[in-house]
Image 1 (tube, helix red, strand yellow):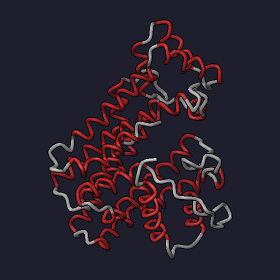
Image 2 (spheres, helix red, strand yellow; image 1 turned 90 degrees about the vertical axis):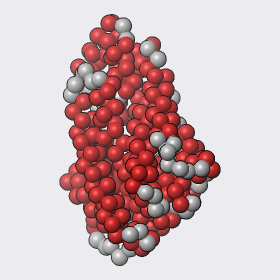
Image 3 (cartoon, helix red, strand yellow; image 1 turned 90 degrees about the horizontal axis):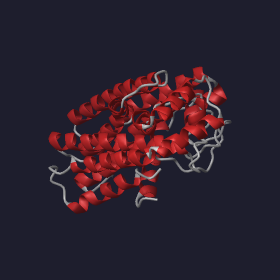
Image 4 (tube, helix red, strand yellow; image 1 turned 180 degrees about the vertical axis):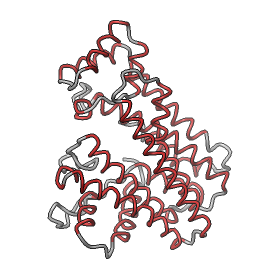
Length: 339
């Protein structure tokens, strides 16, 4: 695990618990359940927060600018809440019964309380994310910067929804170009990670120009992470494609798009036949993976993710930061390439 993760996780966990402090009622019990703090009956459980990569990007960006990650804790907590809002809604859209990443044996909100309450809970997480941005005032961030942070978060949320729309719409199409996929990923995942990095730099006192450089870095790292996640969902833990994401939907990921563009005619025809089926069977998924392996689609996608991560760090070339300040971000960038 990347150095500093536990320190960041504990700090964000404390910030999030402060956000929830004094909030009582069914909605907040459900949200605490999703965060991993309580069980279905509302009884506290001893489980560490699963900190996603976007909040860490906020903290590392702030630390790179100022030498201290603490000013960005409200921003990191806000980004974590907004990301969880997308996860809760995504569970409903994809019919995922499993809970948050890292707790696959924990049923998702919609599986326990139904899709209507899951949508309500997701909206609650989104609203909490917006209110949490205001806590930047407690970290001595100037009011005008807090307003900029709020605007950035709202834009990222809207752009993320655009990307999710595209991702869902792609499921009903056989032909999707590689450029269309990258555009979708830049919206679905890149927008929030760009916001996370920008807010971290802003909390650290960076100039508008430097904040923009961090946003560009975050966007590329976000797209790289989306590609890595798609690879993991396609090949699965044992490299055989036996993951629920493949059986339950027909996502158009970069490896699949590459195969549709480069495979021999017979392979393209077979992929088309598989994806015309209403429901994919285990043998269909296994054959799909075989075709992807024939054209080395996994290596292509991994190289693209690595290229984007490198471009992201290169975006900070004119930010005036020392190599010592950039080292944690370089290590983080390499870590997100691990499936």
